[in-house]
Length: 182
Image (cartoon, rainbow, N blue to C red; front, side, top):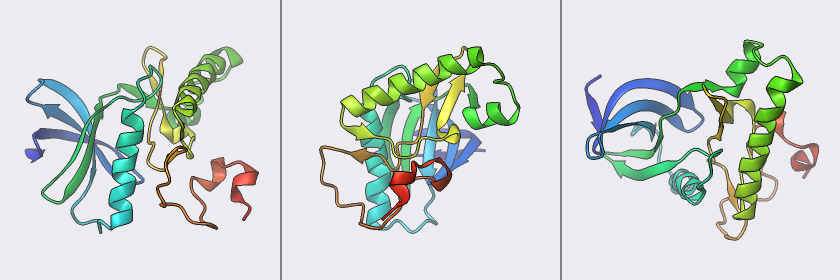
């Protein structure tokens, strides 16, 4: 793949998310590999989608914690919205669950503690993730957990106007029952 988005040279696609594709890319200025999350130019970039996308990056960029993915940059180039994050090597929690790799409480408990630590830190900063699920939890090869995808994060202190009464926000299967009643 010989394509660039902004200054980033795309090396390969490594995933797909609810808002776009994720690529392994090279940052030529800092000479490092990064993860580049992109909404393609073909997607209808409504004002609400653009606001949600930039809100994800801004919310996550405020969170410097070992259990939350680090945001390096965000922008728009040639009709593509993008967020640049640290490149993670490991597996999504959903993949580990599907492979039945986590069988004992001794395997699961350290991951849950790290998830809770990251979420507690975000909550202290006024940010509620609103879509915690195994696909948004990444486990590095050394066992460290990273919380991903603050795409529908609610910034408690801000009045963004991007949610409406009666609108369900999150993944239904992972929501608390109280979140789904109107």
